[in-house]
Length: 229
Picture: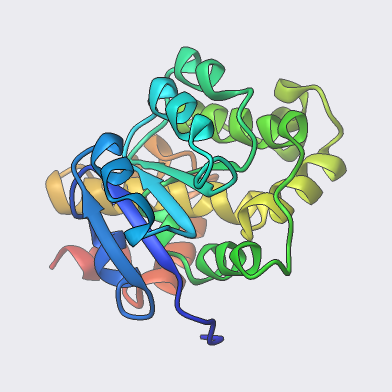
């Protein structure tokens, strides 16, 4: 992994696997609330603030704070399925969202570091919202047969344009993000249920059991059947 200078990262809420991963190369803090972060004054000014759920009230308060109003914000959740929640944060600049397990991907982390080091800019608010609503659509419809055109039509842009801005914002190609999301869902079903592999493949939106097995083996080093043993 490419080396980056250590960053100050605050997690608002509780500890997550993401914290443990990122603490290896960065200075991290966990605070119970945004008000606690404010009470720290200038003792710990973060480069990145990570929220574990969408709270527009927190973002409004954050953007009023002179020291933190331009700080990059990342919202990570297991899933994003409520459109109203995204609507509530659609006016805020420098806010990214990502499914928690996908935020662990090397390419996402590197894209985040590029932003924090000033080598890459976040997208304008209107453009970034297209990416956010695409992630929402993926979360709600990953089990269906999807194409790039399906995804692009949902947010009113061309598929080439969506692919371009998605990769710029997330550091992960659009189709890779969808496949990784599906694989994570399939992995959970393999761990937690006895549903046959072929059925899991269909439930998670893969075009065939063979394609699912190939993707799963490439990602996890074992076939779905071997993983379950």
